[in-house]
Image 1 (tube, rainbow, N blue to C red):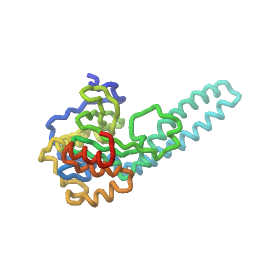
Image 2: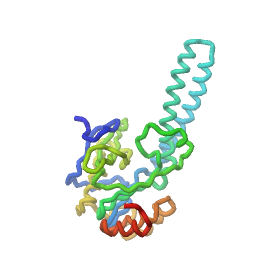
Image 3: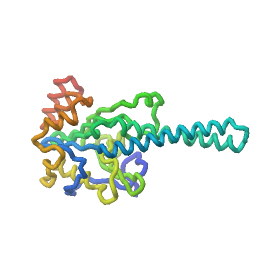
Image 4: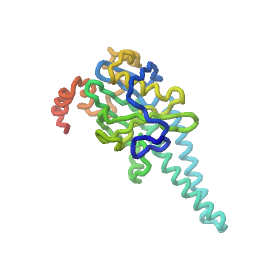
Length: 268
């Protein structure tokens, strides 16, 4: 049965419902929580190093291959010319796909934490612009490797799906829909790499937190609940988070959030 969300994401495996699944495992991605919000990182440092190196090697390989294909194109053998043209197009397209992967690993500082406020139902994202599923990108964006996007979402309009990454690895993606519909308007990566057994654990823990389940141990992160100042200093400060948004992490109601936005002249 296909996904109920449209357009359906490439590699779709399963839709995830916001039901009373209770999981205590979070694979070290959960780093901080208090009674208002929790924070998950999407990239571990070891994964960033590995995939940065891997994609860099692939980029060098594709550039070398393109040079070879150009030599074939301008050769004097018609068969080699045809191979060169096909190879040039294939390698160029591969390079077009690999460069964003390199950017989002090389420039996803501090694991790109994503913040979930269960009091206001808001989700806050500050990540590399290339940390998404877009395929068509303007060429000028490739000259902006540090480009970022900072967004506030409504948890109510975010829905989880599992997609297949290959080699028995999966990813959990948050589909951002138009309110009250299944029409997808944006995607947010929650858990980029997970094995087949643990693919629902982080989603389950997060739902437990957002529903105030006691099983979601808020003092089980890298930073203890009392270490909010240290968490913000290590993971938030100096990484481009707007002041209003950092203050909104701890908003305890939509009314309090509205006051914060008014204070910083942010449109509702």
